[in-house]
Length: 562
Image 1 (tube, rainbow, N blue to C red):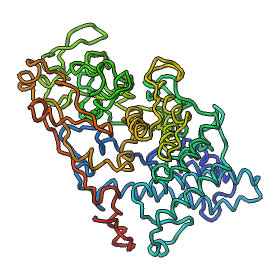
Image 2: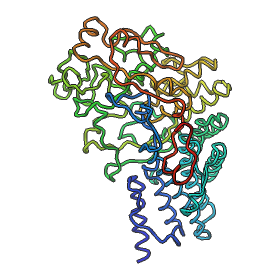
Image 3: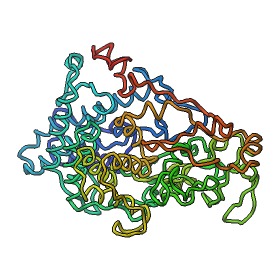
Image 4: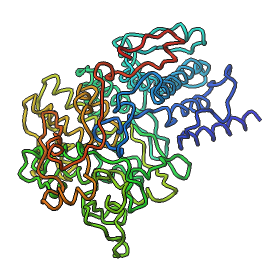
């Protein structure tokens, strides 16, 4: 019965790892005094650390890439505080993962002598990798946090004080370095994909970059690149679809599966109204205008930019991130033009009511844009549940981390240009040595810094990376203390914009040194509408507040100005 129970638990645990259930309570559990005494039990405990709920991603709606009709968030309305729901949830869940990793590390000593030391070291490395990732999230968002590498009683936990950010970063590096030394490089196609050396190198590079340790970021990213195990996916547009599984570009991911019940759900808000969605969560005009022209120039400098059709002659990622006007999308021709009261259903060729026009549907996209990146017909099936890989970090990020670190160190050489050009050439579906795309050639630090930042925005939109970029570049107060603009109401839109020949916009907006568009002149001319006024308090919001309950019950010091 004992063996039968153990293998039943093993099966359940493997199922949970494969499908990443959000239920954080195990279905069954062995005795805490004897568990983790052999390889099967240790693996089951490690599996629990890969639950998707424990791996936090930042929301795109916290950034200038996003519009939610006239709605704002606690970050974009500058109302974030120690009682904000996601502040408390993310703090608690991250510490929950750390506690579980610590339990595994302490209890696996029971297995000494029952397996090789190399095997034990690999398991320790996996737990330390997870712990390092979790502390990286806490450090980058809260900065002044509590550190523990052992299990604590309630009394001990209440007595713990915050560690300095520099000390915590050293602890994180120690865990990542142990993981790099002891994790496997890869897994076979038949094995569950777990943390690897490359994942540890990549995540170490990311937190080093976030903390301004460019030397460590450069070294860790280069080590990941030199493994030779990862490469850019051949097609940028297809990388994010549900049918693309385990791409060689994914350095670390969590799998999803409709069959096993682990999905992303409730996606109607991202989908056009003709296709049955709500078009509530949409790309911002700020994002649309940030994509370079196909000549590699900002749109205010590019003679190729056409304000009447802002998707032509642009970096290909523009039309692969945002649905271009007049193109087929989810079986309908997408056209937000206020006089296009009908549109075509592609599969039948029939004209149908155009619900993506605000003259027809009041709650159609407020700025005429909808997301395309990762969106396909699979989104309309299975009750709006989808199963794309949850990519935590991919190789394009590693390349751009390496390039940025070298730029900030002013160690500019061919390897910097090669890293950026690999990413850009893939967008154009050409080899980086080709002349079929606007290669980056400048070696001037200030110019490369701007190029790198724009490249990251074009590459990683809708992937949860923009928030930490604007935080660490210290431009959040600039890009968020400005309105979110959109289309005029239909009657005014026809009178003031369409009938005067100024659809979609009258001209290219000015783009500043950070790649940020100035749309205010269009508003001053009465040609666009202010949808919502974003706010960001630079005195405090570059750090998150410590949850109020922790300050009140544990005596932790609150972050400044909260």
